[in-house]
Amino acid sequence: MTASAVVFWVLTLIVLASAAVVVLSRSLINSAFALLATFSGVAGFYVLLGADFLAAVQFLVYVGGILILLVFGVMLTHRIQDLDLRAEARQLVPGLFVAAGVFILLAAVATRTPWAIGAGRLPSATTAEIGRAFLGKYLLPFEAASILLLVALIGAALIVRKREDA
Amino acid sequence: MPPTLSSADFLTSWSAVLLYFVAAVGFVAGGLIFWWVIRPSRITAEKLTTYECGEEPIGGAWVQFNVRFYVFALVFLVFDVEAVFLLPWAVVFRELGAIAFLEGLFFIAVLAIGLAYVWRKGDLAWVRLDDRVSP
Image (cartoon, rainbow over all chains, first blue to last red; front, side, top):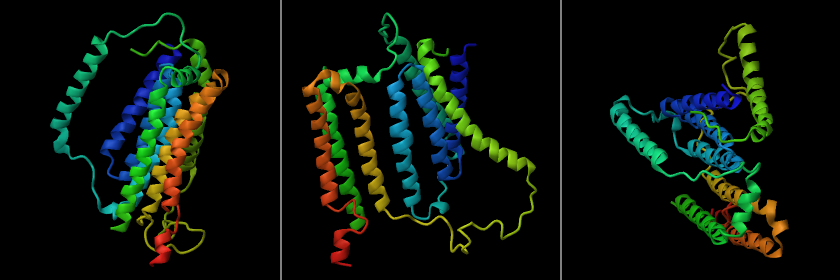
């Protein structure tokens, strides 16, 4: 086994184990912290696939941002200790069906899509290439993203303000 | 099958990051496990209380936090994503010239409007303006 294969299987173990903790843990805060390991493991997968920029984004946005938001959400919940949000055992059968359905769908997409296989080596760093694409061919989506973020910011502020007043 | 897409140089350059992660996690976990093995276990009720710099703790640690933290988290997340979009721009705007630089500035300007909005509306203030006017 090559070194990258060893890393791949260790990452797989980390992601699956921590995802299991997220679902099965009794305490909501433990679930939130286990999600940290899951997100970090996925960032490792991006590195293995040669997507270094995506890996950095995964860390910045998911580990650094989304997770903060989740932990804050847990801390802001009233009487959090009295809640039992653990998934019930009776959801096992429907859960299996949904998981099998998602697996079949993903497997079909992965095997039937005619993936474009480029010739030559991968770029050593993808960030500059993404930057050139942003400022050239995909300039409009790039600028539209800023409008989208503006809408998200104002919307979030409005919703929270309304809740505070109530 | 494990992926074999990446070139060897690319992964070698990332092995330092991997090593850093393993060292960081191993340092904390190793310390915890080592002391868990060698320390004696004599538990008293006083030892189990929360340590708050020598003060007697009052109530539980699970209090409900101020909802205003959530606004800060949301605003942080939006600008976090903005930073992600600006990173590729920051790497290449020098080689692409003045227009590319202005395109990035426009991106920042749109989000500056958002920052000005939440600032002006008092969402960033710890004590809100309307709180002071009508307590």
